[in-house]
Image (cartoon, rainbow, N blue to C red; front, side):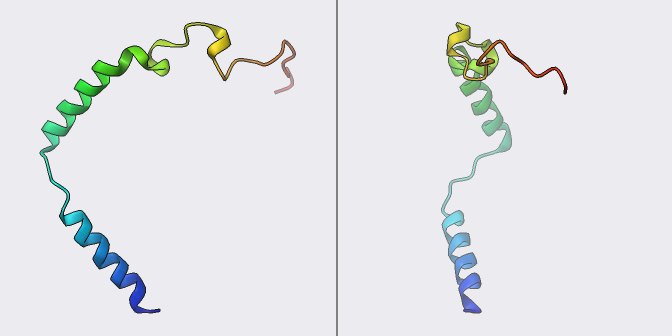
Length: 67
C-alpha cells in the first residue's frame, strides 16, 4: 500500500501534463467574455424577476427578532 499514493500522484501528473496550456491574459479575457455573454441569465448579477422565483425569500411572515 505504500506505493499506491505515489502511483496515483504520478498518474495524476501524467494526465495533467496532457492538458493544453494558455496564457493567463488569454484565460482572463475568455472569462470576461463569458461573464459578459451570460450576465443576463445570472440571478446574482440581476436578481430574480419575481420574489416567487427566489428560493431564499422568507417562507412566512414570522421572523425571529431575538438574534
